[in-house]
Length: 405
Image (cartoon, rainbow, N blue to C red):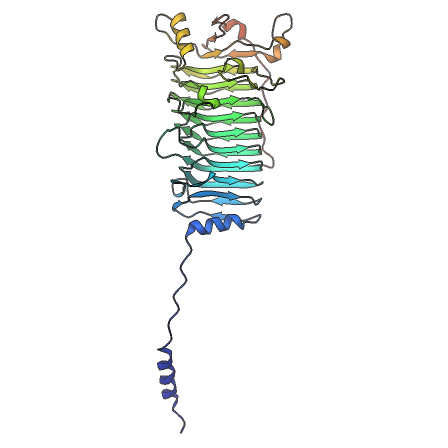
């Protein structure tokens, strides 16, 4: 006898009751997914970072060209490396045509974001921070492009680096704008770099606000840096850099420091309340650094420095350097402040003509009300008349292809 359709359905239903339902697949943690996305990335990929705090115990790395990493905001999408066990950075990028935006990188063991040997790099609205406050144990650099070309850093925040919050090294064609650097040893540092525009930034409560350096024994020197429309204020934080590093010699209370760099233009900045001085100009020979092993062809003299149109006040009241404090006491026994611009007065003897520096290599200060103090031990004193000159202005840096508009 044939079973009715209803009976057949009942039999099938009973048979199904004995089958074990398959469990839904567990969703992969985002941390694991992000690592895989970076390893498998291809040109044109956009890697999205959702809102949240994501914990990593080892470095992240990206080697594919043409990738964008995009979060939901520097206070919303947070990559935390607190307790990091492996790796020298938080995120290491060795790629061209790279963009990172709207994300935070916190508490890395070493550098937070390092971009090495890339071109066409955009770092936009990125926060790097060591959340435990200024400590020698913090990583050296927050935002750290090195040996890069065509670089834009904008709208970012760097806090707590034991060397420099925003550091651009051995690079070419760089714009650093609309950033904030605070509670670092050096707020913003441009080192051994050709053609950099640094403008509309805030550097406050660092040991030194903005540093423009050339250092010996590196892959390239550097020249042509413009600093303008920045606010450099109250950079009086005690120096917490590692002993033996270059920035360990930066005295607390330094606004802008130019060391051994040529063709630097400093104009239209607000430089206020930096206890050592508003602007310090130095050769490497009076920097406190060891000259041992320095390449003999290294040009350690700052030349073609033009300071004009800045608003400087409140500096030089309490130098964070013993020699400068002693000089202040000797020259200004009434308790006055050091002048706005301090220069070691050291010039290259090989370039002097009839005992004078050629016009195009001079240190020139045309800044209303600003005095210049030579801190050369052989003859300290005010030298305003000797620096009353002008230099040809530097051209603006153009990023090509156009980055960031």
